Image (tube, rainbow over all chains, first blue to last red; front, side):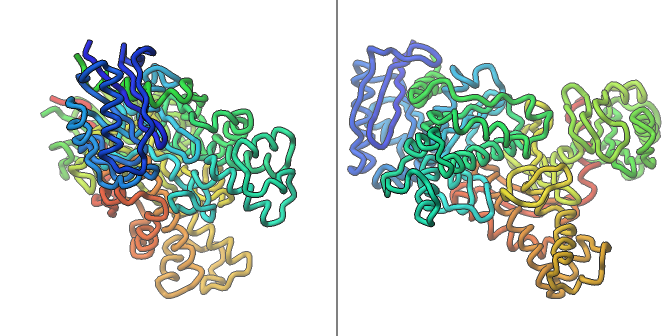
Length: 313
Length: 313
């Protein structure tokens, strides 16, 4: 087998691992770097190359890297990466090929996490699969007829930026009334703060700016009405979005991953109840809706799996 | 070339035509029947077989038929057809094969109209294409990597039943807050009636129950504020839905067809303005949004094209 490396590039850390199979890596052959996020693309991709070479114990035969931002996997250009300074229109594939001395495939990090779930997680055995990753924001991945789907611009599967309410809150990307503005972790924290500021009673009144999704979840579990309503709204918005995706795309399964999976006890009941607000029964019956299986490791597993897929023996 | 027939089955009429090429039929070799809509599936499919045999001047070598309802093109089962009595779980492919004595392919009528637009209309030359047909209801078709896409249950591309507003009006399928409830022809007429009944001023006050989409359009063009607002809302809802579809699916083009194309002067400006409420710029730049090219003939052209595709020489 070729010496193939997967890299998960995040805003704070870079993780590299050597593939041992279609969706597995060698625990002993990993490397890590802090992300020099403010030093520009060359510095970041240089650190990625170092991690890859260290993990592989020499020049790899191929690298796949998941990058946190919209990009075109065909041209190898990153359009933007909001958590990395100076990443606009960056030829990341070419720069990393030069730094590491081997062929490189770039892809969006959420897309690769979804690919991992399709190869080795909740999506295993499906032909048409949707992965939704809900944390600070909401992203995703589509597998269509067994292929990771990128669309015309390379940027498909942005499921967080689909309609939710005509006059809903604005998300981090400036979109009014999209799913991310109602159901992401940031939205849950922000909506709670706004409600408290407008005078709604809540056990969280004295927390001030210190309100996070985890704190709202804790309050909801303890019976706080506002916190319960915010989670019910988020779950309903996710369920309605899933209903629409089921009607348009007719998947075999939808998996939900990311940090919000830690609040599945609060989100899944209203989510599952709301799917039927929009989904046709025959399509909904064909579609499993389940938490993702791989957890925070999905990004690295997906990069490894993509390296194996893109650089076969 | 084989003697292949396309059939467009509607609630009131059946049209059959003989294929002369990938998306063309012989004007001289057509046949027509009234749809015996209340007589059950055998009677309707019997009339379809008669029309096909008459058009072909004998037993055809293959038939493709567009049917107005959710169905599975692989199993040949129609789940429901709201405008035809007794059509629930009907093995339409098998019944029509028995009646016509040749192989049959069934598909959803909107899917085939979209296929026609892809082969010979606005979608020509694209790889990933969305067709939206807006009339009484809102349906559609997806072409993914050059294949008409059906999804797991065979029912994909129901773009009318995607989220619009959390508390929006209910559509004909009983879904609250979906696109169809805000932007279909029925929705435009219904929302106008409801607004007038609730006391809103309008030049249409005295029309009573006699309000149709065409009448609302006429009033909007004459400057009626209510009618203008109803069309602006419908256009905005369509544009936001298109924005979401662009983010998830990243198509090369979206074509809008169906009866509402007659009000494109009213719908397209707010529609195009609203795409950017949700769509990422890079994906939107890759996607043309245009009226469909083939008009009401798309259904029959699509059935002919599908017969040629499914039963090659």
